Image (cartoon, rainbow, N blue to C red; front, side):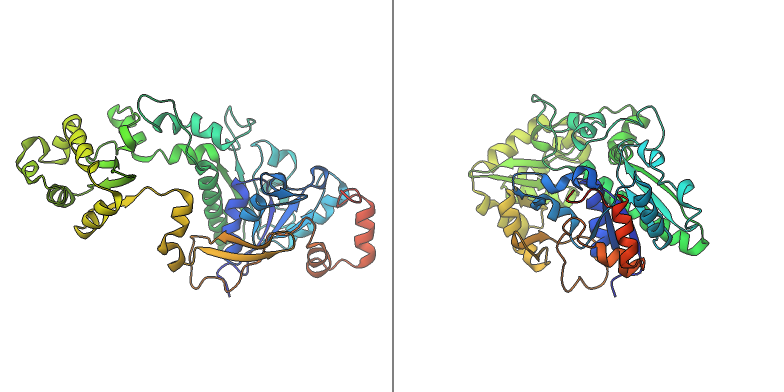
Length: 401
């Protein structure tokens, strides 16, 4: 049995951040019932190009493996009836909407506690359920700028730069998943559920970590660094080799001593300017150009074996195909497969959250409303007449929607 096999989650989610969080919960065995709004064709992620056709996209497959889908119009009384019945038999309601929307559509703990006193209502929003930005939409790109990430990224003489990945979204999804699991644990212990108020803004600010603490306590102002250099440890950055790039990091004094030997500059060990972390940071303008000159003289394939044999933290700068071809990916089982009626065999990335043995098999993302029978008849026990009555009342959207 998977660790979360006894947990049922109603996911009023869309696009990337929310679905990324619940993806890991599904991989851990949770039953995630994805509520899709039939008025807008379900989750917008179904239509994200370039690999999209009809209501199927590889973007959607990426974030929704192992879930169930039910088209449900929460604005219709009949749809709300179904939702309320699902709340009665579920552990959590999980959403990623604008900060004021959970209360507007009635999916907070205060709205649902009368149906299920132990339900956990986890809302991942752009800016949280309070504050002057509560009603603002939160998108990863905007949050990377607002939270200071872009100003810290890129070359000192270049423009502020977004990360190549939607890291605020993905981090926010993981934070929300952690909050939900903690909430369910507490609800089972105490018999009382709660709200989990998680936001992308909170996540992005929280991940500023030690540079923010340095600023708050020492007046430190973080700045962009040359070739992605560490803000305090020298050397710890990207260096251009003769045919590519490598990262070399001396996070301990022993690594610096080993590096001086590997690059055949033992005299640096006697140079007082480079005798400690503090001295190397103070004289980085002298040391780094000398290291750049040295590393440029040999290829990546020449440098890395020597650096790694000496125990110096180092590695190549891969592109995405190279990263996926790294033998560690196969050794760790990080690429998994699902079967899809339109795309055939879809290769996906395994969840890095590991508890016990990994799943023996993975189920593809659901097609919209695919699990109606399993949810309505199997879980809720509705008979055929009841389902037909609900459909006629617009619970599942218009016919063909």
